[in-house]
Length: 120
Image (cartoon, rainbow, N blue to C red; front, side, top):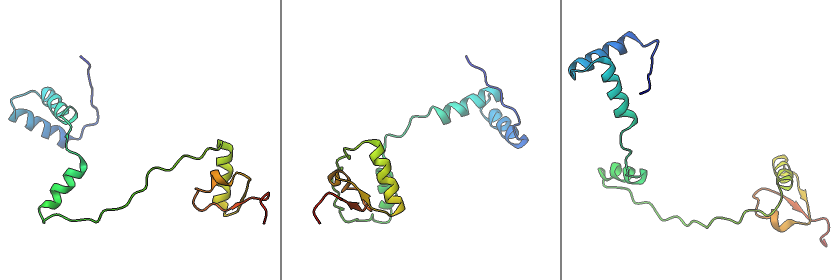
């Protein structure tokens, strides 16, 4: 078994541990073990956060929210990291990115594209 030494424990915390140990007819060491075990090894809830929120609001009759249309995940860009870095710099600076490869960059919101080889 491993050992654990705790230093600089507040006197009131130590007194509370002593009282709790006495109430449970345990030593302070055993009481500390049990508290750690209960807190750290307790079974995690299998209920999701959505269920917890629903339960909380069911007390007031629940809340009906409208359905939200969501698009599927977008296709990741097919360019190299250097290209991505240049595009990020251009977008952040608010300047246009000059490239022939406008197709791969067209899905980046806020990025201005210029194709110098295209017919104007």
